Amino acid sequence: MKASSHLEGPVKRALRVFFSRVMRVYFRDIEVTGAPPEARTGGRIFVANHVNGLVDPVLVLTMCACPISPIAKSTLWNIPGLRWLLDSAGAVPIVRKRDNPGKSDKDNDAVFEKVAEHLGRGGNVLIFPEGTSHNEPKILPLKSGAARMLARARASGATGLSFQAVGLEFDARDTFRSRVLVVYGPVRPLDELGLEGDALVSAVVTKMREDLDDVLITADSWDGRILTARVATMFANDAGDASLEGWSAIGRRVETARDLLENEDPAAVRAVKDAVREYYARLAVAHTSDEIVSGAAKATERSRAHLALLPLAFVGVLLFIVPYRIPRAVAALAKGSPDVASTYKLGAGLVAYPLWLALLVASALYFAPAPWSFALVALVVVTPFAALSWLDRQDRVRSLGQLPSREVMESLQRERAAVMASLVTARDRVEGVAAEVG
Image 1 (cartoon, helix red, strand yellow):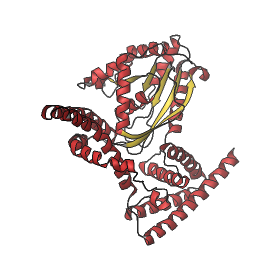
Image 2 (cartoon, one colour):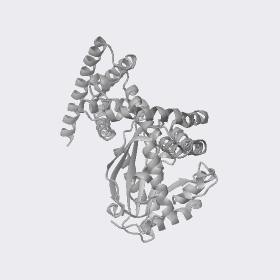
Image 3 (cartoon, helix red, strand yellow):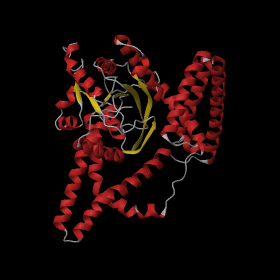
Image 4 (tube, helix red, strand yellow):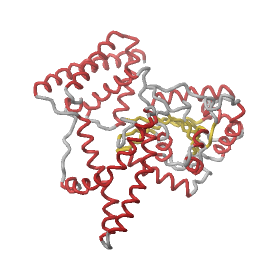
């Protein structure tokens, strides 16, 4: 492993620290799993799926231990206020065909050369090879740009080059205080492919696609994606695993099993799908969730410390209700697609919250005499975090749904037991088929 010779400047380092804090506020929980890179990683291209606008690059850049320079569409430099951030982050603009239909293959030659030199010096690069943020339940066809950048760097004499897939899974990507999982795939040294030229580019693109598919739950349709997610949720609840990492790992196994069994017995797969759909339809009618029916939902204890935060939380809600509503209103007015909703909310929040905080602090210092003014400033700074703690708890309770009547609960539990029995039978069949194939 080579150390990066591209030292991270103080501005870029400060931006990484700042936006990592922003991500920890925007998301309730960020899980990182797989094979995350070390701080001294260099000469590597990271390729990630792209389903959440500008939030995706911010997540990867701030959750990774090593400095990375992102490749971004050139039109982002036209957005006021964003140019400085992109330049400070070391971003490299690339012209897309859709943004400039008249572009030729030579238009990005300088970019490819710049990236090749960066990789050769031990720098790292982030690129989204699908080419655009989207709302599809599967990976879009990959562009060859990342692979050609690696090939160009190798042809220029760079050594120790590698690439690595990064999967981003969101439980509610357009929702403030939701959860996200960052999954790092295996590191792929370029030398191990043993190829050159076009053959190398083709092999790298193929391997990138395989690795992205392996770290994500995908399907040909949203119906299939939702069904896979629901089956994974049922197995995870039975296992008592509430983490996104556990859910994602189960979901990827369910996806593999589904594909294998559909070739062997499509009728059995349809029967299982219908049973899962009917069960979840009944959950919706009862306004409850599988977590409650399975018994996986744990009552949230109101500890003394949590109760002690209630007065501060109440004050925080009163003080910050206006900036709390602004991002949601901006996203609604923008009427963008779901994959950019969080981008609008995050951007609006980064403007609204600091300005509102500054207004509250200035008001406290102006209208209240010392030392009360300093106490009020401390209150203004602390109370929003107490409010977030309580809002998280209330959102969690609401997301679980209500507790059904005893009769309905018993009926749902019987239906769930039957569905789980069919799922376990299908799993056992898949394991038998896999053993025969192996």
